[in-house]
Structure formats: C-alpha cells, structure tokens
Image (cartoon, rainbow, N blue to C red):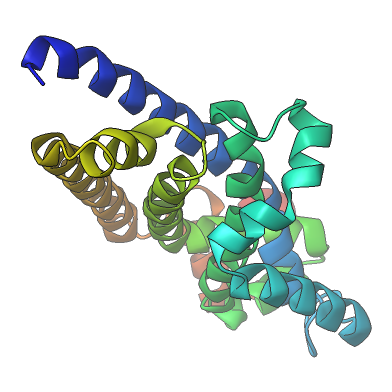
Length: 244
C-alpha cells in the first residue's frame, strides 16, 4: 500500500480510538471515583461503616476486574445492543470499555484514598465536619496526585482494551492492524500502528507523571495546608468555616 492509501486509514483509525478511549475514560471516572471512595468509607472503621455493603460492592468490583476484556465484550453483547442498537462499531465498543474501566479505576481510587493521612480526617471530625465535608475537603484533595496517576494508568489500560475491541469489529487502530496488517499481510502498516500506540502511550504517561509530580510538589492546594496548620495547633477549637 502507498502512503496516500495508508494515511486516510490511519486518520480514521486514530479518530475512532480517541473517541472510544475518551468517552469510556469519562464514564469510568464518573462512576469509578465515587465507587472507590465508597469502598473506603464503608469499610470496617470507616466514616460510613457498613460491612455488608462494603463486601457486596467489593465483590462486584472484583468480578468486573477479574473478567478478561474479550470475554466481557461477548458477555455484554445483549446489553450493548440494548444501549446502542448494535454490537459493532466505535459507539458499541464504548459500552464494554466503560464497564471494564469502572472497576479497574475504582480499585485504584480505593488505594489512593486509603493512603490519605488519617490525622487530617480526625481533625475535620473534631471540627464538626460531616462525611461529605471530609470527602470534599480532605480525601479528594489529598489523594489528587495519586488520582491523576490512577487516571493515567486507566487511560493506558483502556487504549489496550480498545485495540482488543478492534479485533471484534470495534474499529480503531486494533481493527486496522488486524484487517490490514495481519489478514492482508501489510506488515509495514502493522508496525506503523504499533509505533503510533507506543508514542501515544508514552506521551500520556509523561503528561500524567508530570501533573502528579507538580501537584505533589505543591503539597496540595485549597483547604488542606490550612487544615494541617489547624491540626498542628488547636484542632478542637478551630472553626470548619476557616478551612473552607
């Protein structure tokens, strides 16, 4: 194949991969973030301790994480058809990508939030802060560098999932590599797609690492530095409004 023939194929495949990964990432973050925080809040000794709910949520997340993506795609075909009206194409691929990304991101969020200094949580509780205040003012801001790193990891994982989605009609770079690179023996085109994926993943990893290091170096933002200062002085007498 000549470059004039390859270029439009690559442009379309890159656009399809970008669309799949973008929308599935947004859905995974929107649902995985509260799910991961809920796993921490409902655990034994947590702010909203509920062992039964924690175990149920944990099992659902574990099942979602343990299932290979290619099997998940097949298992969700009926649901995908109900949501999108089809089981092939970029739009259809977003459904299993998002569902596969939610439990993956939720576990990363759980790990990030669990690393937050418990003393800060106790300080806000001593100041009369409720669970929502603790999540909004302490847990999320303190875990933000780790959450950004988790988002980076999730995006890279979803890029890999999208390549697998391409092998069963999902479109994107994976579909291009299989249909043209493998089935039509266009080895050069296959290596071009591999190179594009490698460059994209490297750039995403670099951007994510840079953002996480920048936030970590600033030591957090908003109310958290003030909260540390108040905790070090007289946390019991401080007013929560001063932290807001």
